[in-house]
Length: 295
Ligand code: PEP
Ligand code: MN
Image (cartoon, rainbow, N blue to C red; front, side, top):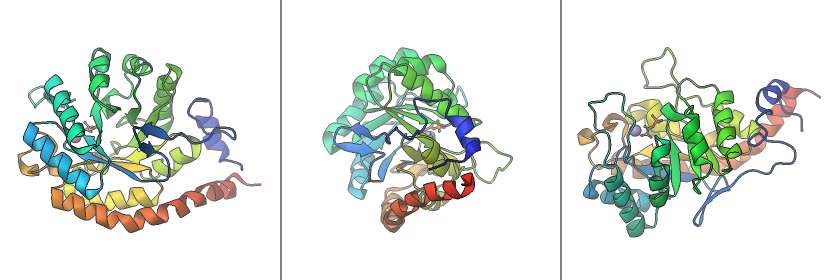
């Protein structure tokens, strides 16, 4: 099978994360959960852990609707130094409590290499946010953290740069990486970011790593989240990262883009038929590439 020659030149130098004839796809195992395998894995929860009640209620609601991983930031990268910065270790402890209560795996963000050890103690997946994609000392520290890493695309990063960061983590000793498209900065202001939906089939073609989509930070408004989630499923994403809050209007961060429990449940029902056609589309991707790559 001949890949698009241009893509080949661009991405194949990141040999640890690039797809080759020999490399089989990476399936990241988190307990009994397989990310990048045959099921579509939804990670959901609040932007930030705010209180025990907020987190546990959300965990119960998203688990009941079919999510498999609970998200929630304890260390928050905020655009303003005057915004809520997260509960820190107290937030990590609440995430552990929610895991015990619901059986959900946990994902939370790590912003500094100094926090890697303590966060790895409490979480199942380490999230690297868009602002940290090029923090190479953090990426190197994650090479030895003993947990899978969800690597978000930098808001101004090309896919090549995303794969370069993935290569840094893998070269530092950790091949368990999930890539995440979360929207990029463009001239458009109607949405918070521009969801680069083509990034999904491109990354799935040039890399063996799982690829998920965060429609919440792409949209910036909750009304767009379900339809972007549909698009993600249809282009072959391996799952989603979605913000959900018991009372979005009172959220300490990202309330505008957070779904209510009812909206999340409706989205999960709606997604079923789109997820069902996704494997057929994944089969189509290599064929499209052969056509473009000629011969
Ligand atoms: C988040 O997931 O809440 C977050 C801060 O995301 P991003 O790094 O994509 O802005
Ligand atoms: Mn957020």
